[in-house]
Amino acid sequence: MSEPTVSPKTSTDFDSGHFRTVLGHFPTGVTVVTGMAPGDRPHGFTIGSFTSVSLEPPMVGFLPQVDSTTWQLMADAGSFCVNVLSSKQSDLCWKFAKSDPEQTRFDGVQWHQSPSGSPILDRAVAWIDCAVEDVYTMGDHLFVLGRVTALDADADHNGLPPEPLVFYRGAIGGFSAEG
Ligand SMILES: Cc1cc2nc3c(=O)[nH]c(=O)nc-3n(C[C@H](O)[C@H](O)[C@H](O)COP(=O)(O)O)c2cc1C
Image (tube, rainbow, N blue to C red; front, top):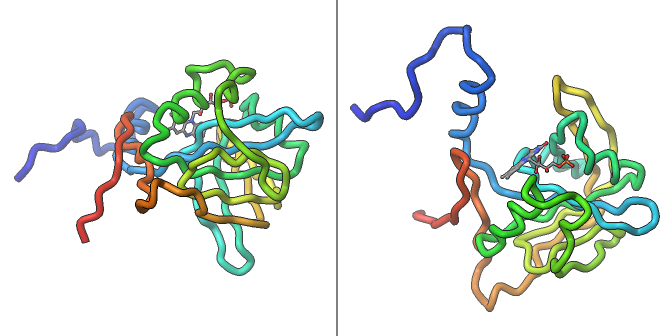
């Protein structure tokens, strides 16, 4: 039998560190959720909690922190765009997280506008443009529910199938299909 990778703390008496460690064993894709502030200033942040919600009607969602500066800046626009990062875009994963101040995150980044006006990052694996349907408070996070208004996976990746960026146990890497 292989060794467990976390301490066998199975009681209900766990702390937030243990919660984060265990949940970090669930791999996610990496997205940058973007939006425009009134006045046409682009905003965006790295989000791993993106999920598909409903097919009919088409809806997706993600969970920013309740006190998220970025979400507050783009909430008034009423729309957002989810950019699924490729394995070649690991720099953007960190740039749109804490390592860059919010004001400079788009410096040097190539982007164009989605139909709703939000930034599409060039060469993302896919983009999903949404109108905000509802925002729910859930503990220390918000659940932002979006109705999908346009979407595509249209970037050229040098003629090769795009490879997504994957986040697992605090690190990022690529994905290789085995079957
Ligand atoms: C791979 C990865 C995934 C992340 N996923 C989320 C997420 O789902 N929700 C969230 O609130 N922050 C997430 N973050 C952290 C935010 O990107 C980071 O805190 C960002 O600076 C938030 O900006 P804000 O303080 O303006 O809200 C993630 C960071 C990384 C590196």
